[in-house]
Image (cartoon, rainbow, N blue to C red; front, top):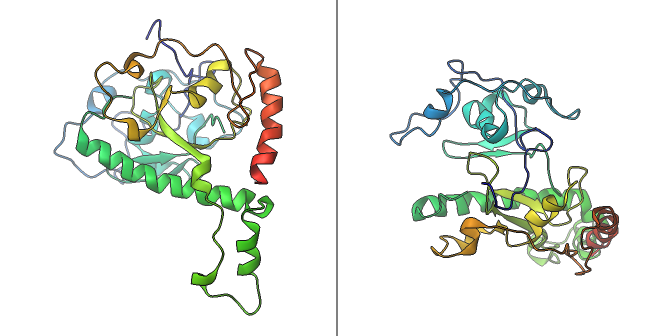
Length: 268
């Protein structure tokens, strides 16, 4: 990937999404059912596992014990998803594992139309989970959600079909894949658009989610000459996702500004 823009998911030597207790030959038997399709993990598991990497202070025990690192970090979840707590693995089935990002910042198998549609359907489910969580965390502060909440608490109760609409939190969610993924395994990002997190430390962290480097699933399959197939350079400027102000390369000022914008966004 030399010469290409990167989201820099490794976060000072750490994989962006890492968690596992599994080692070759000791995977949980309570995971994916047998499949007639080629096993994408067989080749990976035949490799000598990487040495453990340091883990963040705020993480689960299984993540701290992971043997997977670097570009293979996501293999931890696919090999033994049942071994992780709900705080890390939200849910999984025979094709998908949904996780909470180890380094939250708030690819291209999609020429296969059937697989693309399966990913789109799964993405919808995850967006609904994220929207519900945004409502739980911030709904009580949102002006547009207040009429609904007040109506729900009225006495006598108002019938469900007569309640005011609640805030559409889905419009405050962004999702897609990075044009040049930093991890070996295909992964789809689903996150709120506020871009406020202690893990967002670098210019490319911000630009990888606020430019066309984040490719929505609706854009696939990409045309053969689409520049996102070999994304080279990020734009020079860092623009606030909400007001459009230009912070150029001033990351500290941008982060301070985003904190203010986040509060205004929540109160909408």
